[in-house]
Amino acid sequence: MEDPRRHIPRTDVVLADPRLSTLAASAGPAAVKAAVTAAQRRVRLGEIAPDQVAETAVAALTAPVDGLRPVLNATGVLLHTNLGRAALSAAAVDALVAAAGHTDVELDLTTGHRARRGRSTLATLAAAVPDAGAVHVVNNGAAALVLAATALAAGREIVVSRGELVEIGDGFRLPDLLASTGARLREVGTTNRSTVADYAAAIGPDTGFVLKVHPSNFVIHGFTATPGVADLATLPVPLVVDIGSGLLAPEPALPDEPDAASTLRAGAALVTASGDKLLGGPQAGLLLGDAALVETLRRHPLARALRVDKLTLAALRATLYGPEPPIRRALLADPAALRRRVDRLRDRLAAAGIEAEVVSSVAVVGGGGAPGVELPSWALSLPRRYAETLRTGTPPVVGRVEHGRLLLDPRCVPEDADPDLAEAILRAVGTG
Image (cartoon, rainbow, N blue to C red):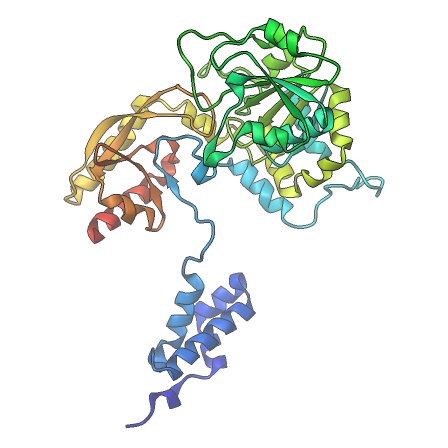
């Protein structure tokens, strides 16, 4: 019999395939040629037939690659850390694309001279928080606190309540973070009760600042007491307040969640917060407050190592300047509208012969924001055996398992993605 490898098509013939010509525009000619060469090699090894070279190359170029994959967040957790916390607005996504090339990030186009990095973003942030004398942005919330501790208290003391020395995900502990800056912690009060007198008694010549931390991932009830920002602001040292969640102004839906504007008006010298939580922007650390303190932080050598890139600056400005981000729509979603969406989803599945239940659900903010707050919602209930199939499908759908059932809550799923969610479920049930 004739060896089929003698019929391997020439590279130029395969590259002329319209499908590969189209892919060359997006993947690049080199990648397409490499995929064709790899497919020809598989023919020589006897793994595929000669007439499958083009098809195999196309499949290799269009297959999902390892890395970040967009998912549908049907967990009912608005700021799911494992899913990247806040989803960016369309305006922020457009800004990322625009900033991907060369930009005027540090250039004044009028004068042709170097300009302050990210000046338009900083101006937009300052306008959003007029109570701040100055603002600065670093690469995440922890970095904001590290910069403050290093610049203001390295080799000195930070006075902080024992009840606020929190641990967040993956074993990350606030005391370890602060100690890494060279500052010493002066703990005051007890786990459940601290007073202004406790703080005042601890202040001395070595005090760099008093730190107040929002315990963003837990709530203590019962016999508790903690002084407010206004009380601590009367002490004779700067007050730094880590509000965590990134609210810039009061949010009626979260009345107990601290915000930057109110905290500054109450007397905080410096506020630190995250940009990728309730603000709804990219990962960033915000520093807001006294102009002299912010300038001290901005000029510290560590600030260079913690600075943000042009993509973060672009996405943050668009978040501040543009339409409301997805996190806000999810937070304020009408439960009745969510019920209608789940009903339509159930009906679509029923038409395909798939039985599913509509059940009441409880969504949460997550991401270290608004602990204890429950948001009434609705979910589609399926057998839990479909959880893995949905997670590994296209697009991946991530729900949550409760009491042996898989719940899919659409609060964080864009409404225009409901057809995609329905199709994903249909495929999962069909293969499960």
